[in-house]
Length: 296
Length: 307
Ligand SMILES: Nc1ncnc2c1ncn2[C@@H]1O[C@H](COP(=O)(O)OP(=O)(O)OP(=O)(O)O)[C@@H](O)[C@H]1O
Ligand SMILES: [Mg+2]
Image 1: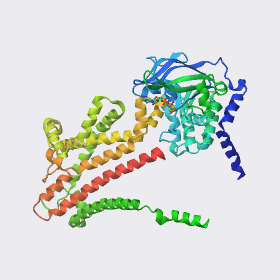
Image 2: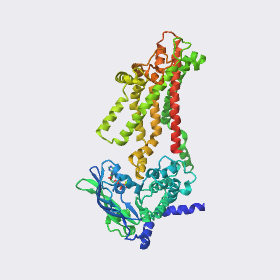
Image 3: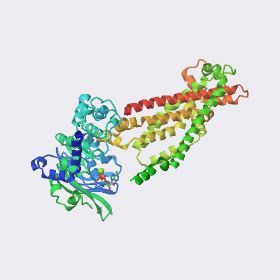
Image 4: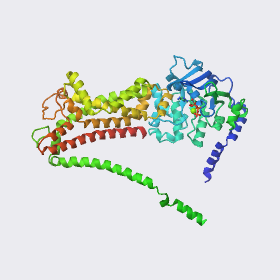
């Protein structure tokens, strides 16, 4: 009876949005605020994304820094996923999708003709909303990427290192050859993170990675992200405000507004700043309304 | 308090909430299943009882003897050989072409006018009666390409059946590919796999069990077809294979189990009825053997995928 108490307490803690937000906001700047001299990984200048004639996101200016966690928040349909997918050219796979504007990755134009989207995706990994392990063994899931890319490293070592990195090794080390589909949802998602890191990427894009998980599994992934930012630059889309407050260094707030000329709802970046600023003194009223739940 | 409990008990009681419509529906479903099962049993029983005079006396001899004018010596060995060869040629030709075409249509073609047109053509071809394919085979594989196939040969017959099952192979493969969740392909691309790598290492393995089941069923179906190979020229009479080489056999006269059944039933004498039934049992065995292989391979694939 008493042993389950702490768990329940911590779950209640997750539910309490205000306290998390104020906690994060109250953190001393040295811990939460990123150094300003971090190198930019992505620089988006005037980026718009179209699906055929429909403009989903418009005129985004945004710089994403090395070894930081950047959160994208905003109401449904405002183009967070669309924007995220431009960073590893996943939108290329959608017929009719195209990007205009300039998007550089370590100073290189990501959308230049001589850039291979496949090579881009090896360096910029992606974790999806729904855990999507291959119907193969745990081992083969992790080995999938390195096998395609070709590697000199011992495959067993890669598998162990990746699973350790995702905090999954202890749980699965005795069943590496069993199907990944036998894992729980939270384990599957950590497997997907391990799979994405197995090819040694430099950036991880995560599109609502915890939305299918319970608070405890969510907590584990958040811890993992905080640990991983030593090695990776992370961009995360989330609908969970507390999560953005807990894990991210910077937050970008998007919203969708009706364009009177086209009569379409187009996503735009309202505000982008340090997470502490966004959650304590947002500059824009729309941001404030959204984070305080007065979004209308 | 007591009143509430009694009322609640009444509301929850099984009789009150029993789902009458559901029960009726379920009985109908069971009934349909029973009918399907009864038909299967009837087919088997008829075949076996009619074939009993032969099955009881010389079951193995009947399966391994060649055709003969003498009812007590006639067997269906050549028919079994012919049917197995036909199935092998059909599978060997229709599987690679059909699966390849389906992969192209599903994964590469996109939503072009050409792709949609092909799609419609394929679906219509699947509905064309088998005898029409027989005429096509007669014109092309026996006629135009007679030099290669040897004319009225098992090669011509196999190619004809391959044309017959090709649309079905394409459609079932397409459906199996479509059933693979898009998230899996996304995962592959997300790790930096090329389109070909995603198809080869993610989509095809996941679709393999479905592809296999559909295609093997189509072969089993084709193995039982009489009309097209009749038109293409399978023999219904007695012939000797004697000491022919493999190529000569492939290009020479041939027969198949459906043809032999047809031939046996045409005989005026009553005695041959048992032979027709015996050959039916033989064809059932061939089909069951084919399906068992498919089920076995599918089970193995499934086990590998989600152990
Ligand atoms: N493949 C697509 N084809 C056409 N339109 C699309 C496609 N994907 C997204 N859109 C549209 O683009 C807009 C932005 O979608 P997106 O998925 O990026 O929003 P989101 O902010 O991620 O929303 P959510 O929070 O619900 O995931 C929406 O209007 C959506 O309908
Ligand atoms: Mg989204």
